[in-house]
Amino acid sequence: MSVLFCGIDLARRIEHAEAALISAAVAEAMRRGTDGFVIPVAGGVAAYGEPDAPFNKVAGLGFAGVPAGAELGAVEQANSERGAPTVVELSNLADPEILALLAGRGYRVLAFEDVLGRAPRWCHTGDSARDGDPAGARGGDRRLGGRDGRRVRSSRWCGGARPGGVRP
Image (cartoon, rainbow, N blue to C red; front, top):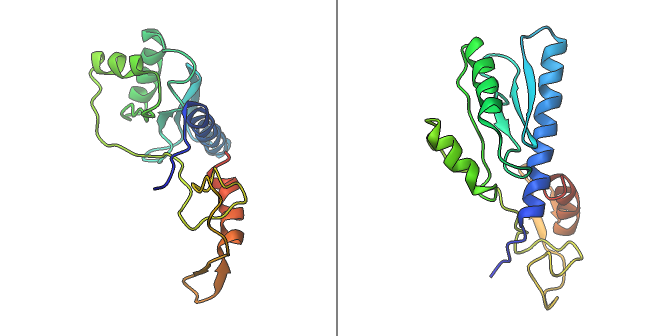
């Protein structure tokens, strides 16, 4: 059985990394002259870059307190002025009071995303606890096939994927 290793601290780091990425993308869109915004909201950001952009949302919320109604009102107003809905992406590990606050303001759940870190069963990073192999019993190095037919050592793939996907 694989071990989930995403607790609240890692979820916070992932959410903050996403908020930083969204902020940078919106800043770049604004440099091109779009009518965007980035508004800090209770440890996360509310962002709008341009119409129909995937980063038009509130992200990183829920790990640094509950936002005040006025904060959410400012975000809702800014989106409304641009003809955009206010979309909140909320981690399942975020402060549960935020879900109640959003429901009280008329928000509804549209989708779920599970972004909990878990090492693939064959991923050997050198950290047996992180690999989901607490006893360190698995050994060897499996090979993965890429779309182009080349074979890659799993340790090389995991070494490259882990820093970008697990350590935001």
